[in-house]
Amino acid sequence: MNKSLQPSALIRTLTVCLVILSFTARLNAQDYKKFAFGPGFGIGIGGFNPVGVNEYIDRDLTNYITINTDLYMYETANFFLNFKFKWFDVTPLVEYAIGPKIVVGGNGNYFFNRLSPGVLADFFIPMGRSGKNAFFIGGGAQLHMMSFEGYEGQTIGYRAQMGFDIQFGKSNVQPYLAFNLAKATDVIFSNTSNRDLDYTGGQIGVNFSFHKIVGHRGF
Image (cartoon, rainbow, N blue to C red; front, side, top):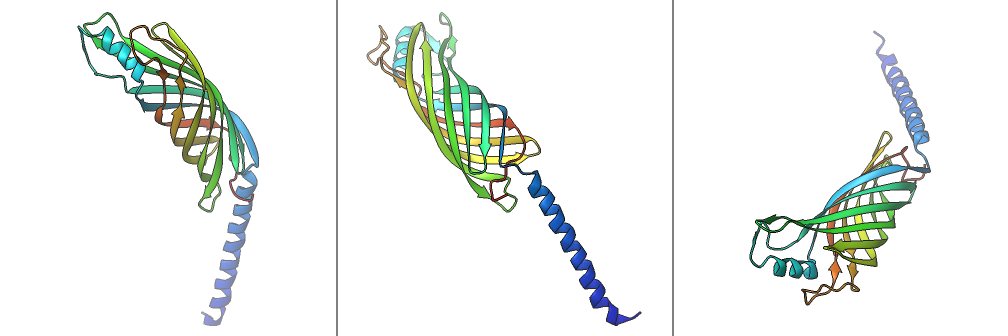
């Protein structure tokens, strides 16, 4: 074996590998879009303290036993259309939330409902070299239409949120943490001293959307 040929053969092999890797990276970069949009849905759970609603329930259930002493948790589901750009996204959505009060031995259960159309926007901070994933922070405004035991109230509320934008294939997953301001003061409860319908509180959840990958870096 001619040992003097080994270094040049090694150099040629490394050069070929670098060319292949560079070509593959360019192909992957070309797959990233600067803009994409698609439908999506999400689920979540939140915590709050609707004082007026709890006072109403407590007075109505004086002679009964309940599973939980106060209404403090709610569940959400939403549907949206995600418009994603390199550095931010805009998401019109409709969110539904329900806070149930389960009663044992009473006249029935109680449900505090919220229907909230609105628009959210997030700013992306890229993570990693691929440009596919990012940390995001943002928020928006929603029209909260709340109802409870025949009482109704509407208010414009605001939302702040942060989370992670994870893209793979044609799917996008966004786990998030949010805080909602949603308090209507134009509703009167006849049996309570606190006259508010209040959905203010923290919320965690995850959104799923379906579109091509958008590069969060300079692709």
